[in-house]
Length: 385
Image (tube, rainbow, N blue to C red):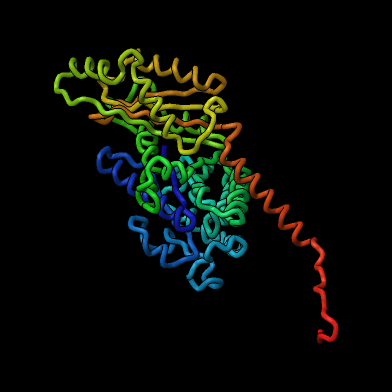
């Protein structure tokens, strides 16, 4: 699958930068091109300068709102960011049209944090314009949710996030949710290590995107997950997870098969890999709520046996009984087996409801404060008013 990636704000720009590195790895190791172009959009010139791998020109590092902020950013001001994005959306659209891979893309991926500022304000506006202008390709939004445990009760992040989620959902074919809090809870050492978190966000897309673009016969599985399968799966609220299992290093293919079954699959034949992928989902959700689901098994060809794939299909079907299920295998890599799982068209995601409910409560409290009568202070006799 081939993508054009556009990152908004500091978070989105860094994720787009990470996708460029993912593509460099695919080109170097597999001679496969999956990210046709990447663009970063921000109102802060210094943030654009800090990016490492996105092309260094005005069509790939797009500065908006220069007349408003003089290149200094909006400091989380969503109202200002919305005005800027609405007035200067043409800069982003022009950059997309000039992109070298725009006509060849299978989809456009937009990335941003929902917390506030240019990312959460600009992404939905651009998504809407793209959907209205280019009807031939889907638009996916990858939204990074802030760590809620660090927010105070009156934080504007709740309202910013709820607004961004609603608008992105309305104008995107799918919204891939990434909960920052999940990473921090699993490994407290990751707190404030955003570069490492960004890499963990992007990593699951590697085999997932490469599989359908593979041209060498020995790396084509019995069932390939190509762009068509992915496009038919991604819809609405979406979670992605990746699980890996190390394989013993042995030279004999026969021994490799035996060892894989003995040490990793045992009686359940690889179900541990599936369980790991589900445990590593980008946002906590009820997996039985998925309306569509997909998994890709990547492992050395000697281990991707027909029976193993059949066992995984049966197991996954039990986990998502009401979902349209797609699956594939990719005989690549060495030293480990990997499963990427996508759960899409999710009916309920508690994290989203949390932001919606908190935002609604804040709005009610704001309305009550605005309509509250101003009481006159008691005035002491003889005092001057």
